[in-house]
Amino acid sequence: MTAPDLAALNSATKYPSIPTYHRLDPKNGNLLEEQTRFTGDVLLTEKVDGTNGRIVLLPDGDYFIGSREELLHARGDRVHNPALGIVDELKPLADRLEPRDARGRVTVFFLEVYGRKIGGAAKQYTGGNGVGHRLFDVAFLQPDVLERSLEQISSWRDAGGQDFGDEATLQEVAATNGIPLVPRLTTLPGDELPASVDGMATFLAERLPATRVALDDGAGGTPEGIVLRTPDRSVIAKARFQDYARTLKRRARR
Image 1 (tube, rainbow, N blue to C red):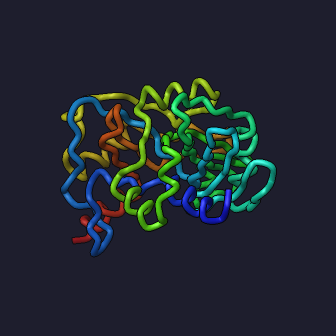
Image 2 (cartoon, helix red, strand yellow; image 1 turned 45 degrees about the vertical axis):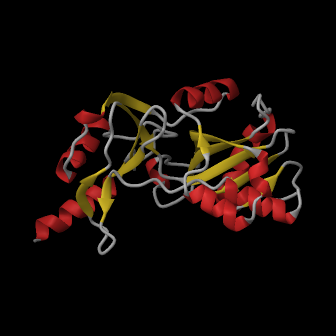
């Protein structure tokens, strides 16, 4: 692909930010008593604290590996950047992936890479040099999107233009390609989710007392949080332990 094509591919396949379950106050970072509204069933999964990686699989079998912000590697070592250990961890997986989309779309695998020296929470997942990866989302991209200008692609992405797979599709992609998923905790009705910041802090501690993706017995085991989503992925939000602990600590000082 040419340089402009790579820039377009990078922009079109970046992972969007997930909102917090309780809205963050832009003034001080505290959580407000305003939560994301869910109706129907809600799937809870563990949020793993590492670094976002992506594998972009083209219809012709070519692939690119990227971080959240940039493409780091292309099949055949045409591009290679060892940043954060993402390429070393994901290249064996990328090498064995085969295009399976019957509609000829680009498939984007979004994975959390975690463990050894990856982020400040590395010791929560390994007491040694363990590194792992977990699939948390998959999206499909029509190739003609890449013909747009970078400004148009950015606007399209920010407006929710990316076509993410629902839970059934994500499960199928993971099973077909032998990729471990982030842990599924439970599915419950949206009206059973706690409304208050206090209630969600308790809910997190009850639902996820320790990480389920520890890589060895020496791991600290403290989890980052939970991602909440509808099975069709039309609504998604995250709840992190540190956000609730910080907010409640500041409230207690008043």
